[in-house]
Image (cartoon, rainbow, N blue to C red):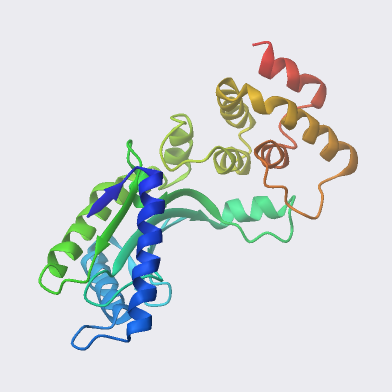
Length: 264
């Protein structure tokens, strides 16, 4: 596995890979090298077999692994690169996420068109205390088995402990009390608490967020006023303050909100 934490380096390497892939397409397919998509799909299937004992089911579509844990679904999904080059670079990227139909149903209470069931997770390298982009290169046939074994080991050491934070209601609520935590974004965390009708936890999460991001309070207050006066708009504003206001629209009476966040 290779892990990169420098964003500038990721951007530079992506540009170089695009250039190299374009050169290879222009020069024609070299003889004697395996098709990247075939190598990638086969590697994902081997990983799926290796994690079957952990209760995961492999699906070639995706490809991905899934297992159920109470109201949660644990999902390991795989991704490769559009810039793979036969014999040189065949990327394997791994994502570990937690989904919930119950949270999706709660979201549909204020956004009927949504199908968003995401709770937590992300690219597996970002679930570590020191985040970064993790990747495995499957291009070398001799080194491929070791790369696959390392990918399985990383899922066991990183993704499985993360999934253990969301096995049932009790573990999920305890996990929210540990926020901030890698892989747990503030909006889904608040929405998870609200889906359990746990307003005190949602309030605590929001206050901890704004303790660190006081700069977003004016935008948040303005959007709350707008939403409570005119209702939620049909479009989704992606600004942080608007997203938080949309998610927390029913947490507090508006007259109480400002003092709770700024006078405590």
